[in-house]
Image (tube, rainbow, N blue to C red; front, side):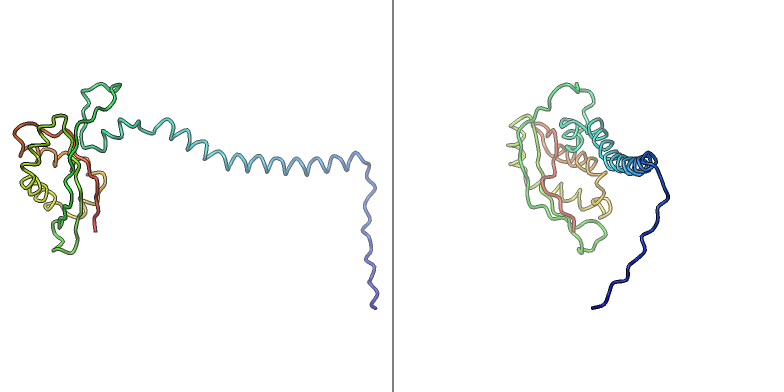
Length: 182
């Protein structure tokens, strides 16, 4: 068997126990500082995001108003949103302007009215309402239909166009219950 070469043991300078304790404290303190810094860098952005979400996230009523296509600033903000009766028109397939039939928009619309008689009139005039919606959306380009910031304006235009067909009342809000652009 080969004998192991004995390695010389490094000599340490004579130090007192106090100096060794100070050296260990410095090493431990540095790692503690690094740990605290790591925790602060990890939790800091999380806490900041939670704070921003808490103070800047819109209330449910504001979100419903924003996405319904209406902006009634005259009503009190403290009032809860009151919903009317709903009707859904399904199966709209539209070729956007300038696509030569290569692209399409598939939507379903939800229409809301506080008056039930309006929904009866909508059922009677569904063919005219569908044609009006197809004409309005068929004039839009793919870029306009894909822009999420224009959806509220689009809902407003749809609401006005459908209300132009109605005689007994008006719809209050328009909702996209399906919106697929291919």
